[in-house]
Length: 104
Ligand code: FES
Image 1 (cartoon, protein in one colour):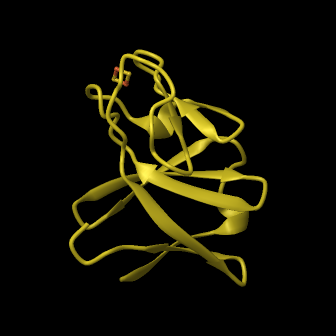
Image 2: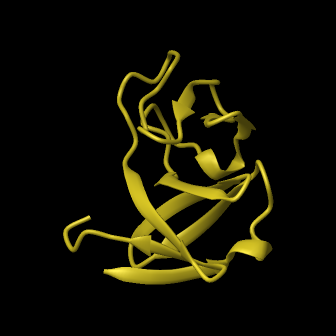
Image 3: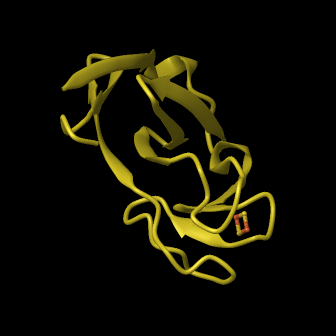
């Protein structure tokens, strides 16, 4: 399923944006002209990764500081040990789309 979520120019750089598609809450990050999307909820506890600070291609959880890779969803540091889901993004003519599996 391909869902239009934003215009690329409307996304802030190096900062997260939380979007909701159906019952999924997704954190999107624009790094340069690339856009990454991961599950918004930290795998450690209740925290919104969209509110975290971005370092290169990772986001730091605002609650306990685990850093998640935006390309793989894997945590680089404790206390989180489990990855968060990642989502495919496509940017076409300045419009950003999320590509969601039907069962995601
Ligand atoms: S809630 Fe994210 S590291 Fe604890």
